[in-house]
Length: 160
Image 1 (cartoon, rainbow, N blue to C red):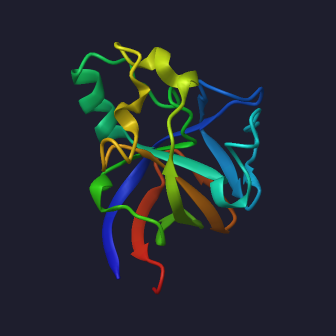
Image 2 (image 1 turned 180 degrees about the vertical axis):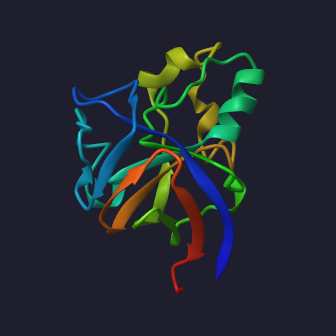
């Protein structure tokens, strides 16, 4: 069942690893991760169930209104997405992004490497445990493809 439609507002990678990630026109989503994006800490990042990290452009806007310094890629997300009801995301939901399909696996736990983005250094502001509906999400790649800034995003339940 299709839930809603959105758009990729930014594709973000860092070939040297870590944050911030830098906006690019496109990147290939692969089972092993996003091409052109290095993971320095493979214990906590990357791998098939954490191949892609996503975050909401609307939530970034709200967090900036709180006085924080968010911009696409600032907290390590590969895809910044607009037009999606973030509070409706959960493990098992699939997103069709351009020609690619990803499946949400779990919330991305924030860590101290992103504390500089927060005016009060409290990076737990985007913790799913402490503030449900405000976290980044990890996803596995179901169908590999190159995705582009401006691609449409459709959300489906995994049984579709």
